[in-house]
Length: 384
Ligand SMILES: Nc1ncnc2c1ncn2[C@@H]1O[C@H](COP(=O)(O)OP(=O)(O)OP(=O)(O)O)[C@@H](O)[C@H]1O
Ligand SMILES: [Mg+2]
Image (cartoon, rainbow, N blue to C red; front, side, top):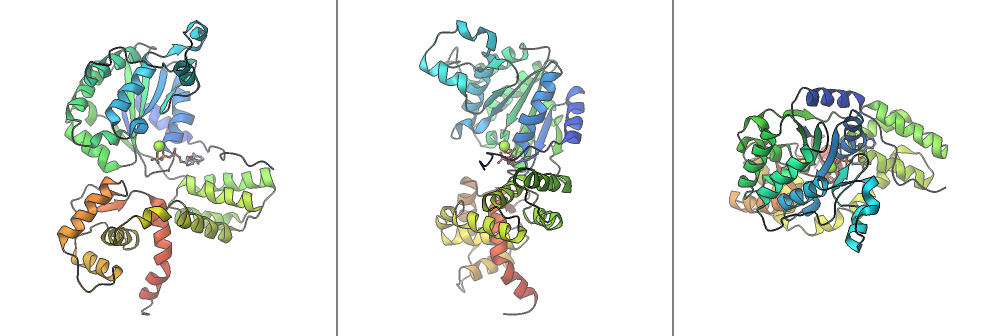
């Protein structure tokens, strides 16, 4: 049996209706959720097709299409949308390798319906990014009776140095508010909040903030149905429902566990979960953990196992010393340096309260939490 690339999408009709209502009322929307909870899938599978069906122009840009320069990635993505062609006009375009490649795929850009993103779209590459942004947004607003832009990973602009760009962005959006709506999505609530607070403009303040709800047991049932349909595997539904919270309600992880069952041809829940943990520990996260110096790993372990987010307390630093097997409690500046490195490499995110952080990747959190589990349980039971 050939294994499917991805498991079926599970729709979120209530979320769709509530976001559509907000957009129709004229509000912009900021959609938050931890990584891999399904923001991008929701926007691509449900929101964009639905607004397109209602007659709007709908497109998406992923700001991480250019990791080292998100503002440039955004402007170039918007230009690819602004100068997009209707599919009917394709035959008339000049053929060259770059334009052919773009017709097949433009990274980090989607346009709903019969449009093809433009290649080499920068009409005035030497003008400022702010001017190019204004120009592109104006053209996009003219693509339909109303346009919706989904700006994915928008918190990438929260880095210092983007202040003028954000101010320019806000001004154009205000000018175009009757013709252009925006949904901002991001995995770092703190990043998006900082961005919106810094840009103290009514437009940003008026963005309705929506938290992507966790998927329910029905999602788990849909995975069980799928196993039965495609591979005739009967999974213990109650056991699978207990695994989902341990996976921190992350749909990607449950899909991975279920795929593991398909590969093994065995629907044993505990075995599949163990295999998933082992796979992550020896695969995806092995290099990451290996690359951390002691202080950084101690901070990561503290955040993964303590249930606390503050890292500078005496208790936190005492526990970190224990992890490092040293009697010397690390001084605050040492932890500050570790935090700086961890934030810069995207392993840890600030949570918006001074001195408080969380692991950006819940997968890492789950693996480390499971490793520490027996220890924590032993301690709770008063054993050494
Ligand atoms: N509604 C859903 N139904 C089925 N699978 C889903 C659903 N939402 C998400 N997934 C699974 O989770 C994976 C990650 O989803 P997605 O990329 O949308 O998350 P994200 O919140 O955008 O993450 P990131 O912040 O890392 O960009 C998908 O590839 C898919 O396997
Ligand atoms: Mg995403």
